[in-house]
Image (cartoon, one colour):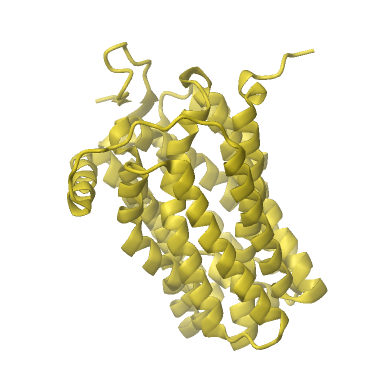
Amino acid sequence: MPSLPEVLRNRNFNLYWSGVVLSQIGTRGTVAANFFHVYALTGSVLQTGLVGAAQAVALLVLSPLGGVYADRLDRRRLLQWAQAVAMVVALGLAVLTLTGVVVAWQVLLSVLLTTAAATFDQPARQALIPAMVPRSQLPQAFALLNPSREVAVLVGPAVAGLLITVGGPGLMYALDAITYAALIGVLALLRVPRLATDAAPRSLWHGIAEGARFVLHRRIIWKLMSLDLAATLFGAYRVVLPALALDVLHVGGTEYGMLASAPSAGALLATYVVFRVVDRSRRLGRVLLISTVLYGASAMLLAQSPTLLLALAAAGLIGAFDAMATSIRHAAVQLETPDELRGRVSAFYQMSSRGGPALGDSFIGAVAGAVGPVLALTAGGLVPVLYAAAFLLRPNEVRAYRGAEEPSEEAAAAPQGRLRP
C-alpha cells in the first residue's frame, strides 16, 4: 500500500487545506447565486453584467495595494481580517434576501465589498504556503491546492443551484458566511512562523511601483497577462449562463447550477492530463497557445448549443482547456518572480486572471443586452482564437517557453523559466 504523501502528514497544511476548500465552496456558490439573483430581480443581462463590473472595480483599484501589504504584514492575520469582512457582508446580504427586502443594487454592493476583501486575501494566501510546508513539499502542496480549487468551483455552483431551488439565494449567502467563519477559526489554529517580509521604510506607492516595473520589464509576464485577458474578457461565459439556461435552453435553477459547475468538472477530469503535460512537455508555450485557441472555440460551441447536453459538454471543454492554460501561465509567472516581490506580482497578475473575467462579465453582458447572449458569446469566443493564433504564427517568448529548468544553488532563490530561441 503506497505511503501517505509527506505534505498530508503536515498538521498545519491539512488544517489550511480543508479550511480553504470549504471557504472556496461558499465563495464560488455565492458568485453563481449573485448572477442568478440579479438576473431574477431585473430580467436584464446588461444589469447582470454589473456583477462583473463591481468585481472589476475592486480588483483593478485595490489589487496593487493588497500585494504590497502581503509583502509587508503577517499574512495569516491579513487573511483573517479579509475573511471577517467578507463574512459580515455575506451575513448582511443573507438577512436582506431572506427577509424579502433585497434589491439589485444591494447585491451589487455586496459583490464590490467581498471582492475588495479578496484583493487582500489572494496574495496573502499564496505567500502563506511556504510558511507551512518545507520547500521540498511545495510542489505537492500546490498539486493538491489547485485541483481543490476546481472542486470548490464545481461543488459551489451546484450547491447554489440546489439552495436557490429550495429557498432562494439567501440560503447560499448564509452558508457562505458560515464557511468564512470556519476558515477564520482554522487560521487561528495554525502554528506558523512569520515569513520574512519587506520591512524597509518605503511608501506604499514605492512598493506598488517596484512591482509594476518588474512586471513591465518581464516581457513574458505581461504577454501572458494579455493572453489571459483575451480569453477571459471576450470569452466571458458566466454572465450569459442564466440567460442561456432560462431563455435559450428553457431549464431552471438546478440545471443552471449544473451548467455553472460544468467547467470545473471538465477541469477536474483533465487534471491527470494537465499534470502529465506540464511535467513532461518541452513545448509548454505552444500547448498554452493551442489551449487558448480551443478555449475560445469551446465558448463559441457553448453559445451555439441547442440542447442542455451539448451545452454541458461545451462548458466542460471550456474548463479543461482553461485548466491547461492557467496551469502553464501560473507556473511561468511564479518562475519569473523572486520571493520578495511575489505578493505584488501575484496582485498584478490577479488583475488579469480575476479582473479579466470580471470586466468580461460587464462587457459581454452589455453586448448580450444589445444583440442577445448567443451572438455575444459567439463573437467574443472568436477573439482569443485569433489572438492566440497570432502568437502561434511568429516567434515570441510565449511560443518559445519550455517550462522550469532545475535551478542551481545560486539561482534557487529566484528560478527562471527557460526559453528556446
